[in-house]
Image (cartoon, rainbow, N blue to C red; front, top):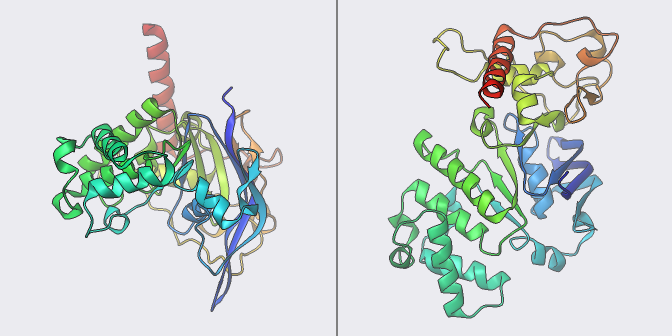
Length: 351
């Protein structure tokens, strides 16, 4: 089994606001294995980006880490000084942000921006940094990299700018690459190209990837494992096939049911009722209970633990308690699982 390159242990992060203290991340734990892609999935405001900014040491001034550990290279990143974190941030752990236009300097040629990132983390000459920048442009699929090295960000399309941002993140050959919704600002065609690019880069570099998204469909074919977040907690985590084809939490059911497919007609698309809760004064019990058609009385009283489904699959729902009644998932989830099992058996028969 691959070794862990990163471990999050019982991390809790809050923000002091005028309205009160917002408990943005609440006691979450997970690990990232060498060479794997872990997807963090959930609605906006569920704590995905805060979790990853905690790893990078990029939290806002009003943020407070209330507890937990972030273990990397036998050190807790939360205890490191700013100078120690600078040697890790961008070098050994890099981040790709959502909007490439806010990540690139519009007044500076893109080649110079990549070369500066190389020189910041590698002991190379200017000529060596330029050569490495051209190689990175070629790696991320920019045609005629030597010529385009001298162009400005506005001379590239949105998809090309995102490729340049990825090149900058790869400048120091990081062990961990964190992608914060890198395809959100792109059209569907560009999304597919960037996702294919990231899969290809991971194969070539063997980097571990944390991919943040609100859309389960985006990571269906690229994630090894999926962690579903809701109201600051991880409510389901497992291998991608387990979460996609044998989901156990009603919130995951809702996310999957709301994904359009080729068989979906205009009136069949599901929407999760209600809105996510405020995290200033979280209600007792399961935060998803007010939106959950299958909520039990226990959901109003106590927060469910992560129950084991398999050795690799866990879900925080009282429906998995041995005392809970038998509940059938929605028909769309049953059909999805049936189609997956049929596909698996057909593939096995053909081998």
